[in-house]
Image (cartoon, rainbow, N blue to C red):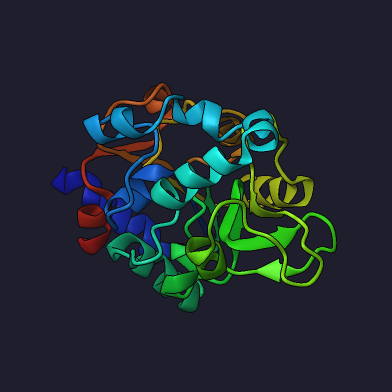
Length: 239
């Protein structure tokens, strides 16, 4: 690990074109659980698996139940950026990091100070009335009851997050692809690289400094030029 850290530290110090691509593992270290995790409380409270509840069809047909799960499991508004978020923001300020590509919807990269962030799956901090387009923040959703309604027209409010059965935003995806394609150093962290189409973004990288940081093995480990297994927060703190 020490040798790998030294190599990564050198690559970071020598580059002004780093792109970071992260997943749920980046946020779990801020206390946000991966919604796919299964626990006793979840089984007691919900009759459907998370992937079903967070689908477009379920949202349309059982909106009230969707929001019961969404408020309880997806709105972790007290979470704070961890060492990984903070280091990435610092690299951007220093002119080393070009962009963050994230599968997370919690806004913690922006909270840490990152400005160029491609949110592949949207954000809980953006919510819009489906009828008139009025904007509402996450606090409004959290403190509403039942199905949140627009104060202006009474329409139903939908989070700007990508649900199962919905496609990713084309402009966001294209921006992420271009950033990854032209990166000198691509650091992928906190993701199992099994959820597509996001996991397929690795295929666009054309450089020779691909870094994978994850606590567990991923299907892409053999493609890495540098592989580090462990806590992403601890590893970033060492850089």
